Amino acid sequence: DNASLADPNSFLKQGDIVEQWDNLQVAWDTAMDVLRAKDTLKHTTGGMPYANSPTGSSSEGKCVHPILAITPGMTHFDGYGASYCASVKRQQYIQYTELLIEEMEASGLFLAPAPMLAAFSLGRQTALVVDIGAGGTRVTPVVDGLLLEQAQR
Image (tube, rainbow, N blue to C red; front, side, top):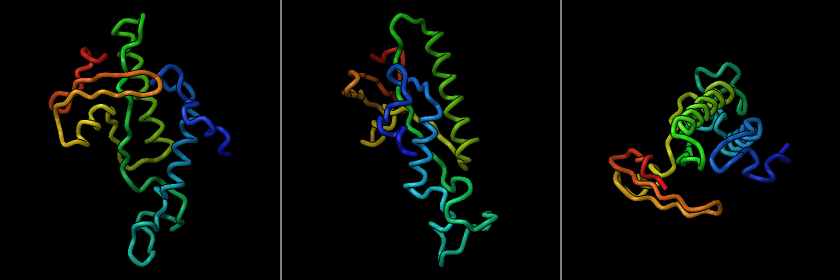
């Protein structure tokens, strides 16, 4: 049922915070099906299944590829302290990891913030990333591949 995918951001609460984890899981399931990431016959020679695939099915089983999941920069929430923001970010990362490792059965996982990957995509480890979107504008300094979250605006 792709009805819950009518709004691609239906799982978001406030900006970057995921509230509806079931809707996010439906989005990941749909992406896995479209990309055939669970297809054990996809990258083998002669159509032979992977050795660790018990059924040899082309659509069942765990994700045979490691996942690079892009996470938002998790900007500071107006009116809340730094410890609350850090707690929310930690909780979001834990739930995201549980979803991808336990439910999607990912073989490997790396959660990377979007500003860092934007800098890396241009071949830069140090950059000032300006993200202009429908929800607002975010400016994030990236120094040697690390976000300077205190300077993020």
